Image 1 (spheres, one colour):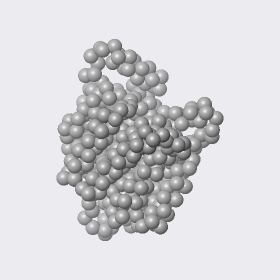
Image 2 (tube, one colour):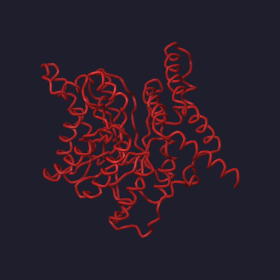
Image 3 (cartoon, one colour):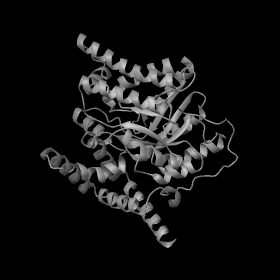
Image 4 (cartoon, one colour):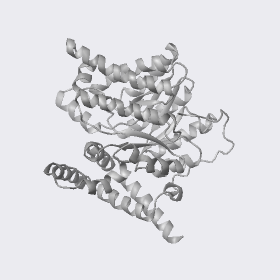
Length: 402
């Protein structure tokens, strides 16, 4: 549950120093640093990363016992464990640095009713755990864990549903409601992750319905806005105004986006304009404008800035300083992924800001799609792998000299 001691501005206005590697890696042993170094070194090659992903998939299908190797390497870097219980050491270590945990059940690709029911139960279990554990301030779920891709796509496209599909979609919305109601009742905010643009319209509609029901006095339901989409800044602004008009609080998780190549390829194949900005500069501009707009309307919106971008983190810190917003104000959170950007997470937390890490978990084989996406994103995001390597090198040199 999110809490805040008071609404006064901190008298200690210390600004985070993102170059401070001693704080960034204070929980990492020399052995941990070396493992991370070699992993990011391997991921610095896009070709090697793609070849490795294909090779691992092939080896797993062949039945070779390589799961222990995966669990000790890429899984250990980016995941907390195979179960909620296995995540406990990670939760404890993050908390020691002042960083909260978002337990992210990252099983993907299951599209059967049985798997949807199991996913709902897992998300409900996370919310119940978070109620009595201040180290877990937020929960999250992925909409395609609750319903079929094709069904979301059909609703988003505005196509008529058959009688059977209408019944199926009613179940999907009931699953959303079951999760959001428990989040409201136990006062544990829950974020609804984003999906591809051809699925997202249906999800946005459900998310707004959930907010109207459960965000009347406080923010318990958050929708995700992918700002690499050229229409999402306008969508965010419209939803904030809608929340003010309809008298509910908007919850917004702001991210740049996760499906850029897939979005552009589909648009080209099907002959419609790509929904993605033409370049990174336009995405960065929209993301940063979204931060400013949310800060200007903090009475109507609570938001989570999900970013690994140092400039965006510095901008939000600056905006909070200028508006004299308490560092621990529960309406503003920073968030990064486990295994990445510790220089942002730990230095922000060191200065008293609300910071969380996404901690994915699930059986190794089931979370491989997530892991491969993390690896490929690190190679495609300009400078991400190089920055991680540079920071690790700096910290290793500092420790050697001390």
